[in-house]
Length: 244
Image 1 (cartoon, rainbow, N blue to C red):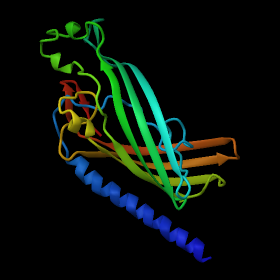
Image 2 (cartoon, rainbow, N blue to C red):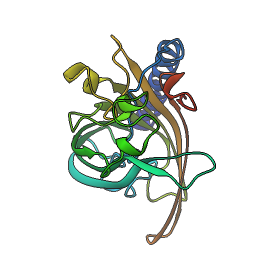
Image 3 (tube, one colour):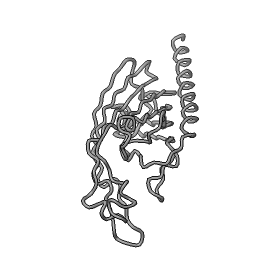
Image 4 (cartoon, rainbow, N blue to C red):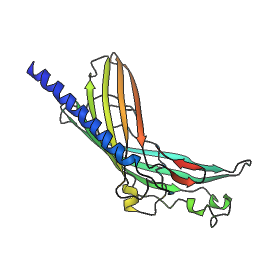
């Protein structure tokens, strides 16, 4: 009976920690504001555990002192394409994007998981003649949109706290908080599409509620709801903004 009580207290403690993290980071990120061509163009985010879906998180824990390690490669074709209004003129500003992810995770007490992902953009290049097809050409007003190669991406790290249930239960519930750091801008302050703006310090993140419904050992239905905080009001062009 004492062991069960200890687990419940531990669970409530991690829930409080995750909520406190959410409130503190929300205060920092919501006040951030910048005008910049720097955006994180890569939209693929690997799931945190190898037992999760490919990019969809579950409410699972990892197990006490269990370590996980994953390597992902993702490719994006025509990641950023502009088309002039009223015409068929298209410009592949970012034609190819190849990104690698080095991720790890560690579980504690069956109810807490910490994780980290280090992305690296190997290729970010433009389509043939892309800049020349923009108004003003490569040296005109839109020349600043041209990509400038690959570099380290924005590192993110976080924690997942299981509130209720295991894979043996029909229903599971967890909270997850993830923070990002502008490591791309810190390693190269001229980067454009590899990460967030060059601010010191910059903190953003995802804050999510994870639920999983288990129908036996075969069928699992995960539902993931969250909110992403970023630098609001980044002007990539006069008509394209990036925010929360």
